[in-house]
Image (cartoon, rainbow, N blue to C red; front, side, top):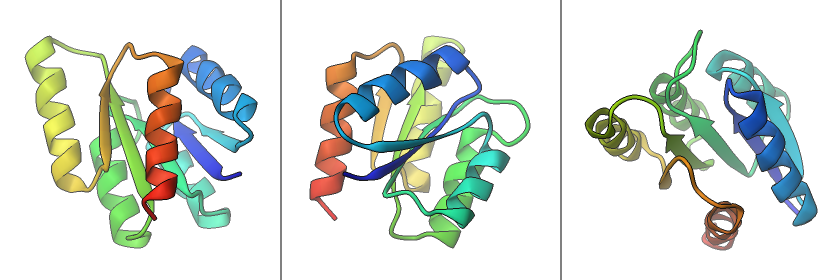
Length: 124
C-alpha cells in the first residue's frame, strides 16, 4: 500500500482517481491545485504524485519543478487533456523534462492509471 497524492482542479477526475486507487489498496490524498498539493506533500510525503498540468493558482509544470526540487525522489505522473492537441503534447514534453516519470494524455482508463502507479512503485 502506498500514499498517492492526486492534484487536479477537476473534482470528477479526483473522485475517479481516488476510487480506482483506493480499490487497489492505496491511500489517497487530494489537492485542488499545486499550492495545496505542495502543502500536503510537506505534511505527509506521498510515494507517487499525480498532477494535472493546467490548473488555477499554481499550475502543474511549476508544481512538478517545485516537487522535484524539494522532494527529489518523489515519483510523478503528469496528465493533461486541456488545450489544443499540440499544446497538450508540448505541456507533457515539458513535464517530462522537469522530472515527471510518466506522462498521460486525458482521457485515459483506470487500467492505465493503475499500471503507471504500480510501475513507479516497483521502480523505486
